[in-house]
Image (cartoon, rainbow, N blue to C red; front, side, top):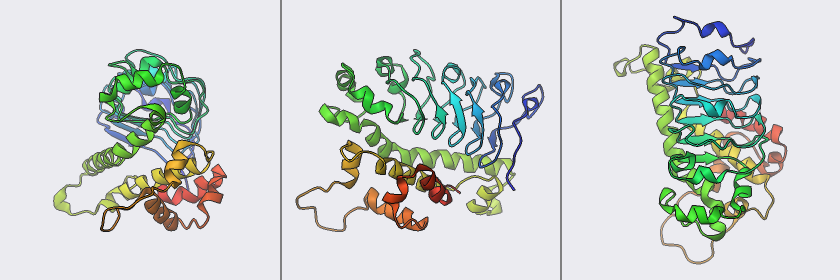
Length: 316
């Protein structure tokens, strides 16, 4: 039986949850909207992680001005509207996942917003427009974000006049040769380079915080799996596997002439060095499909809802 109902506004009141560090209410049937007062600076003063993902929440995303909030996970909900209010958040957010929602409108062009953000996932939404040139300026969003996924907005932005020149002028921020068509590789390359390290670091912090909240120490010799089950939190393997399968389905649905599709299925000609080759993304993705008993991944991925249902075991 899944948890239902709505999120109570009364939870954000003077004296409520004075020592709450982490709130994980994911994979539920909770509906309604996120109460605006949950983001007021005087409430949840020590809250560091808020996970309300995989639910039926809808409406706009409010501004989060909580003093300690660093991680926000609202993926796979039914949130709609624009990002206007959320973009004015003053909380020290470092990782934000808003993927697989119904967010519309364009990306805000606000100078100095979300100044501590290192991970931003806005993929699988209904947003339009382009990434503003101001994002590329020193001190703004792209200069301090390590993982950025804005879906189809990225290739549209690369084709904008002056975009490639701006990227090439700031190559020190990306450690990449951003010339010509390689500018389109930027989000993919950055994602592969840092996603694994970032995901493991965040999940290990979650594991340590969960153990602290449960009153468990290393001397108790409680397995990580038990701690995760008690807190209804996903394991590192499940998180990474779910991310890989979601990206694989996204590439499968791309036109064949798109660059990520060519990179995933292309072959490099010539001789390779002796020894066993390193496992490729295709090798790992094939193993993930076998774990989820997906025998026809390309055909199943064309149906977004079917693919999400089949890859659900990877996220649970």
